[in-house]
Image (cartoon, rainbow, N blue to C red):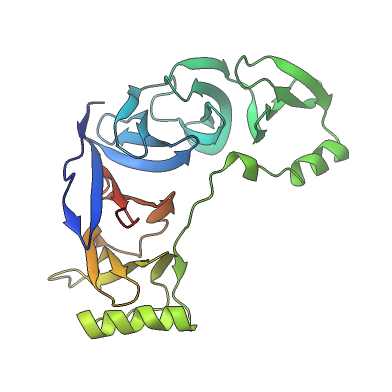
Length: 292
C-alpha cells in the first residue's frame, strides 16, 4: 500500500493562537489510530480494493513517520491487538469467515521490525513485563506467560478456574496512555455552557448524543448535521474546537460525510493534542495548548 505523508501540511496556520499541527494521509483508509508511549501514534491502514492491511507509526508531536507500510502475513486478516511498552501486538483470525482472533505477531514499536510470531496462540492480556496468551494442545488448554521481546514462554500452566479468575482480575491500564474521549453532552452546567455557545454563535441545536471533550480552555464538540441535499437522512460529522469562556470558534472540520449513523470514537485528546481521522484517510493532529 502506498502511503504518502503531508508533513506539517498546515504548520503555522493559527486559529485563536493555536496551531493545526500536522496531517498524515494514506491512499486507502485508516481503520484505527492508537496512542503509544512514549509520544508515538500507531495506525492501521487498509486498501479496500487490494484487500491488504498495513501498519504505521508516527511521532505524535510532528507527524513524522518512524516506519510505515509494514505488511504482515495474513494480508487483510490482521489487526492491532494491543500496545504495551515498546511492543505492538497484532492479531490474526482463526478463519477468514470467523471473527475470532487467532495468532500473535509482536513488532518493535520503534522500527516496525517483527520480533516474534506465534500463529496458534490467542491473546489473553498484557502487562509491561509479559504477554498473556492461551494455547491449545491436543490434551489441554494452557495459559502462557511470554517474554514481550523474545517470544520465549516463561511459564505455562493448565487452564482451570484459577487461571480464569486471574484473567478476569487482570488490569492492563498500566499499558494504556491516559487519554480524554468524547462523552455525551449532559444537563449539567458545563454542558449547558457548550449548548449556549452553539445556539448563540451558530444557531445550532445539539442532540443529547453529541460528543464533547473539555480540555483546559477549550471545548471539543462533535455534532452531526444533515448532509446537503440529503433526502435519505444522511448526515455529516463535524468537529469544532471552541474557546470555553467566549465560545469563539477556533477550528472546524468535517470528519466524515454522507453517514447513515452517528460517528463513534471520533477523536481523543492526549498530552494537549487533539487527534482524529478525517474523511477516513487522513490522521490529523491539532494543538489544544495555548502558545507560550
